Image (cartoon, rainbow, N blue to C red; front, side, top):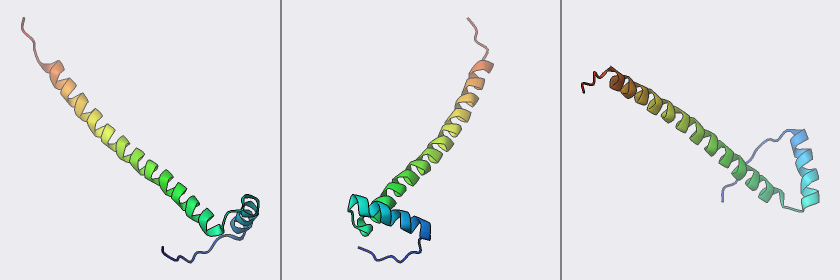
Length: 76
């Protein structure tokens, strides 16, 4: 386990302490769970951006192929 020193806004710290007193969870555990949750959200956002970019590439390629098919002169 790594030790991290961080500065927290006074208002965030006060709210966190208020919540911790009610849920009876150690501050360290609470912060670890919060970071884990935030990391999960960020991984999803990164994946969403990657999928959107790849989807755009596929869409452009599909439109290009479709245009080529439309230009083919079919003879019966």
